[in-house]
Image (tube, rainbow over all chains, first blue to last red; front, side, top):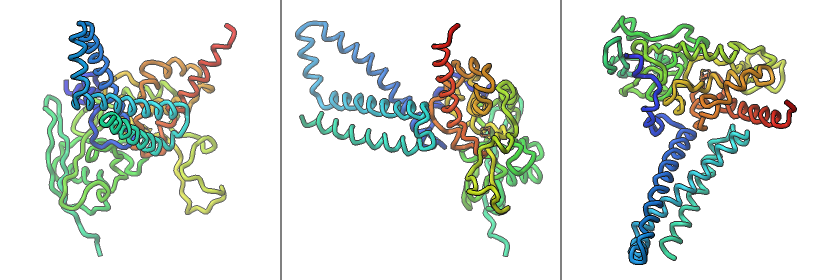
Length: 130
Length: 243
Ligand code: SF4
């Protein structure tokens, strides 16, 4: 019985997100998982919202009012941010798998995250001002 | 003059058969340049003879004394107390993760060892084949220039640190995949099916935690990436090979 306590188990998936004692690659791993879950959640939300549109012109107009609310725009920015972070981090994984920058994966991660931060900032400014 | 002593509290994970895991605290005075294993041994020697932990060589060769020290995997025989805590603070010591706990700090590494055998991981590499940390520029370097070869000491720190290993009992894990890479598909093509599988090298999600904690310059993450290239190359070749 006791043996099971420290044993790997799919039920221990929450350990993926435990940041204690992690280094850069571990942080990248956590970020990749969180953004993946966020994007999957968004996909379902998107389908539900599309379903509302099928309710006719009134439903569409109501949706447009909602879509312009700051909270909704912020939600969209989160989706964009998740897409950028997940995509760039995915590039890190693909590059290192192909043997590129394996011994410099930390620098690669920080470099890509700097690009992500700039991109998210640009998107944020545009989405809230244009 | 003897170095100033530190007062620390050693907080040790305890768990015997039938018990729920818990921590026990042992206040003690230490020389900060002693190693974490020395402090654990002091508890066993002078405070509680029932404390169970693994150790043998005391010089990072046997790989037995791997533990989690303040939440990070360490080979305790070469981890100075000074590097992981400070005077007046608590030093937490736990068993490695992802291995069943046998008692207190000792874990069962049987499955891991047999997987190392399955991939034919070599305990010691011939010098001609071994990678060398900080290689000297000339081979007739003077004897003061110590070097360390990339030998896996089977300490299991990398398996404990790997987040992918936390959710699968079947995942081969970093050290085993590094052992397979050292063999190489050219030397042992039978490894292909084993490593190119759901529980093989594609379960690695590039957290690089294994390399961060490895005390023996094995760099498992780099080897996993290299093994992936070997697998891709082999699969690609097979596409064009006549049946
Ligand atoms: S690869 Fe490194 S961390 Fe993993 S078992 Fe071997 S020596 Fe230990």
